[in-house]
Image (cartoon, rainbow, N blue to C red):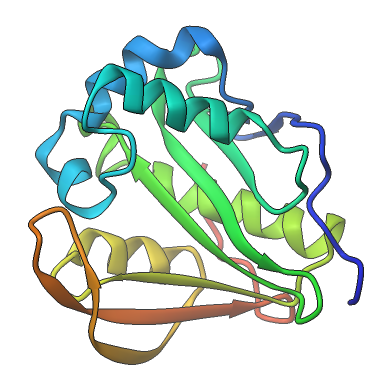
Amino acid sequence: MLGAVIPTVAFELTEGPIVLRPWQHDDLEEAWAALQDPGIRLWNGTGSESREDAARMLRGRQDWTAGDHASWAVVAPVEGALLGSVSLHSVDAEQGSAEIGYWTTPGARGQGVAARAVDIACRWAYDAVPLHRITIIHALENAASARVAEKAGFLLEGRMRSSYRYGDGCRHDELLWGRLRTDPSPQFSS
């Protein structure tokens, strides 16, 4: 696994009812609007403090040149409306592991968008990087993320006590989920 890194040029992944495409400068307004959602601000507060903060976040997600992360805007295939975000980060090339994070816009919730996006990004990373293990870590109280992890083929591995300070300023217990390249991919209905 030594030397495995994320490609340094952003690209698009298309599958079924969603497209994972590189973030673009003109995504700022839709991203800023999504980042005002209380759920996103609580559990994924990066970029939600100001428009400048959101623009800085987008620039970071657009820049893959370090080879240590891959971030996509999740959009509808025809009209291109922003549905969410998915990012592989904390890539450990030597161990062949990474974490994955995601959020969805309020209008896209409950439609399986996050689970599909996570699955698409994972399958790509297992083959292209290649990674062996990807984890999802989320606050115990974030039941929606637990549903995403389960639907995306991750197995619950444990609970980390008082491990991360979220947008409410409080430390929360977190759940740790893992998916190995050898685990079966979930089956989604069309």
